[in-house]
Image 1: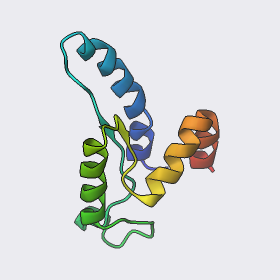
Image 2: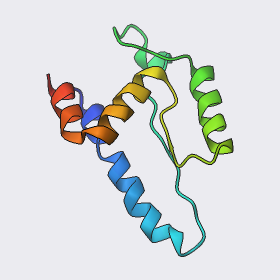
Image 3: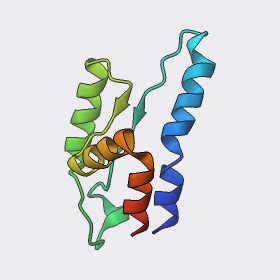
Image 4: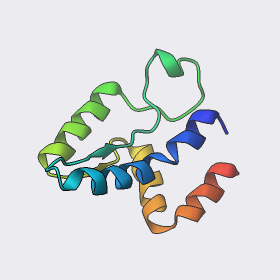
Length: 96
């Protein structure tokens, strides 16, 4: 597992912490958690990658819909569903 995947696992918890800190100031905190995006950074990587345009469109659509947690591609939506239902199950899946 690469270091980025380990760090990304902390993002939902960080967002939840920011929500509590920012709410009383009238600030809304939104988390957008994309999976792999087909950019130069992942060029040559054997992984599911979403088109950047798709990710951007889904983030904007989520913002317009008032979502505070956005999984903007098919891979992240699947992982997000597992994370919300069974965080330890996602951890086991990623460790395998």
